[in-house]
Image (cartoon, rainbow, N blue to C red):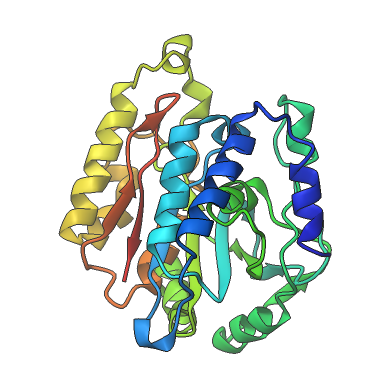
Length: 296
């Protein structure tokens, strides 16, 4: 598929829609300051953990600006490998490296979000790099495209859709195993590949209230976010790994844990998982913590 199909689909979005306005701002900014590509002189590109949002992200100008500014503050990667909360599969699997359709794994939103595209270049080279780093067999699911935990944030961060992207399944929620998997992926960063763990710092969707939709932040979300921020600042990986028993706000902050555990892929891919992280985005959306960071 050609990235041109992405641009064609985006052209059908109404002119007044916040995402179209975002694209115009991006185009103006890129003309004024082209995005510098990663080079080996930069050293390993940082690893990211991001709170990925959902279709409403495309209606939030401030959040889109935060995501895109973060991407522009880092060198343009050579490729992107993303582990999303929305693909839990063992044994390990990779998404299709060419020509796969997006996964629209959400419901109840405006029709335009089911017509959005993100047609990135062939990622066969990245697939070969990943499989060479992991001792067990990694299956390529040639029919599996990017789910919304991958394409929603990346479409905002890199709207040109000109960087190869692959998604790797999350095979377990055991922190130690995920740290080890992230460590296996660490050499990719030396080739300018952006390794991303995609989740949501708090994800108690089943506990949403009208007050949260109106902007109220519940204590369980604020307390969990503050606990995680403190542990990340101190590089306390053991504390983070014990989140089920140690974190305030549980289990409301994470009734199921798949939106937190991609964080351990990110930390494992770091040169030092205990290093302090650089927070790129904080704050809340519908009461859920948007905290996102990178680590070298």
